[in-house]
Amino acid sequence: MKIDFIEELKWRGLLHDVMPGTHEQLSKEMTAGYIGFDPTADSLHIGSLVPIMLLVHFQRAGHKPFALVGGATGMIGDPSGKSAERNLLDEETLRYNQECTKKQLEKFLDFDCGDNSAEIVNNYDWFKDMDFLTFLREVGKHITVSYMMAKDSVQNRLETGISFTEFSYQLVQGYDFYHLNKNKNCKIQMGGSDQWGNIVTGTELIRRKGGDEAFALTAPLVTKADGGKFGKTESGNVWLDPNRTSPYQFYQFWMNASDEDAKRYIRIFTLLPQSEIVEIEARHAEAPHTRELQKALAKDITVRVHSEADYETAVQASDILFGKGTEETLKGLSESDFLSIFEGVPQYQVSKSELEAGIGILDFLAEKTKVFQSKGEARRMVQGGGVSINKNKIETIEDTVTANHLINGKYILAQQGRKKYSLIEVK
Image (cartoon, rainbow, N blue to C red; front, side):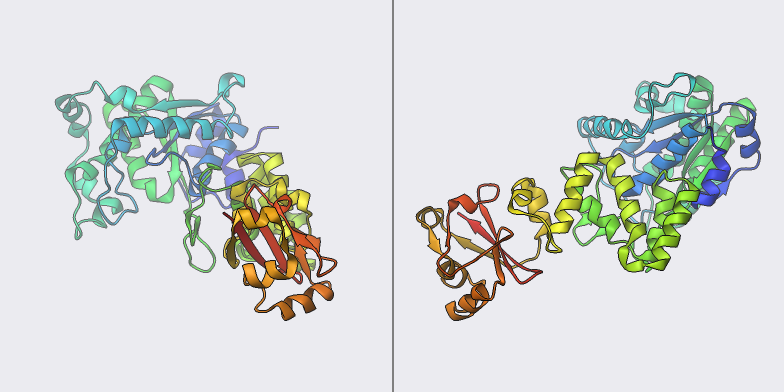
């Protein structure tokens, strides 16, 4: 069943600004609309999920989504939300980034569903043959300097400085909208709230050049309840590419959301219906320690960005930290996931030659490594049943650690009690 796009965005907290007449246009007919994606990296990050979700809901409502990969605008740099001039990328790097972006977008949008199939376009295709004089006549002639100067993205940079290149960005983006309006019948452009100025430049250009009507809609910029920047961790961006952010780390990002944030995120980033979300919230309120909200949020989005198998592996990996899992579970993890789980735990090294000969457990724990400060302490813990190697409890002080214990060919996991771990790398 098709949804009402505007109403869906409202209850999900995804609507910030909308141009008058937009709802009426969307109610009247299937409408083509687009969002631009900046190919300045070889992967999108979770901040990109907001515009992606706009396109997903747009298509679910029966409309035709276009994803514009900015091969041309990526060569200039958008000043919106930026405090300084950006470094420009070369064409080869941009083209590689565009292909990576396309592959990620194909996970979310249906490119083969009839009239409202999604399409990907690249603004380099219509800018590569346009010379400077033609651009001035076709675009610059229709937008006044005072109109451009009034934009927040420009005003915020006047003191620190803005180049003509970035100043002209809104004209380039405005022409994108004009081009897609004329050639693809695109009548609406969407984006984050920081894009409003650039978007309405496009509606103005369409009106002034052809007298046609176009529309604009933006979503709010997502923030964390504590004021921190969404999508950032101590190690940097949370990426959609599993080679940049492992599925386990991705899953953990959502699991670590506060209750207040999870309540907003589950509306914004999942496709769960409102009735189901309300039920999850009610169960969570009754027993917050079960983290129902975080679990539902993390599952939905990890499955859609990665896969069901990656989600299952992430859950198993998470369980390991809480005393669950087996040696088989550990050995089934990729090296990146394994290291992600035990990031920050004490690490030691032993030589492979010693391990091949076998090392007595007390020597291994106290002499070859410093898991325990003395053999006496190690003996007491082993005899008390408080030591495990790779999740297997050490039964006696006569046990030996050998190369058969290796995980990924070079790691051994020592555990004291329930949650104290040490990671031994074998070299």
